[in-house]
Image 1 (cartoon, rainbow over the protein chains, first blue to last red):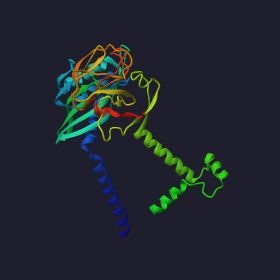
Image 2: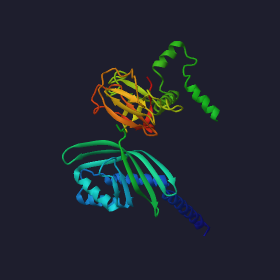
Image 3: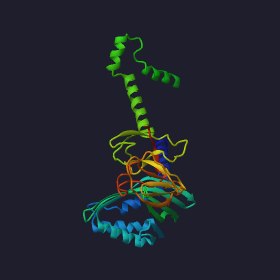
Image 4: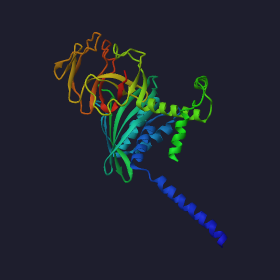
Length: 168
Length: 183
């Protein structure tokens, strides 16, 4: 029995260590969760050259889960500005995908500010690199501000403002 | 222990002690590939990496928008410490982080709250025509009035001989100011 106690103790210690590691790896900070949401948003809005229609549909549909029931888009004086539901955002994303052969959105210099309990503002620079079906190359950078709210434990985007980096 | 390590480290920088002058010169130009030499190389590479990545960032000037102050294909360093203890002023030349890999070299012409416009190439700041000695080439630009928002600055290049559409300038967040050119 004494012989086995040693092995049981080792197994128990290993189990305890595993639980501790699992607990801490699962516990991501709010900032990390918010950054993940932004990266997820840009990745789902992007289109790879080999993306099939079904992939596009799935990606656009999954965008819905990142937005609050009403999301405000502000794009300067563009007619694109307004309030959108997650379904409308998903449909618009699908429409945009049909314009491009490939398009890639990436975020740089992400700055996260937790304003109050459950509300955050994220400022970052987004790069848009792609090729339209007409053969036009797009290579642009914009400044974005996203506002997120924690709803049922998930950070959801409820406002997006897109600006020029340098406004003449 | 720490004192011993420090002493050992200092010794790495005095490899020629006890050598004759000719031996020291030979070892200076053809160093022995030993432990102290490795320590010196690692130190130099680490210090160089920190300095040229975070303090003095090498910048190659690609465009002509700052001519004649800075010429195309010129070279300078972005001095990151310039605005650590001071705020940008009108007339300062700054390096602005534009994209991940591209920075812009521009001059600040207006600060937050300033109202500016350009009429027939002359800059008006808060209603007063400005004498800009750094603008050497003829300019016929016209820009409607605007007020610089808090937290922003208005930047423009010194070379205004090109068309207004081709010149990258405008209102930009002060957070994007990376520093100033070293020379």
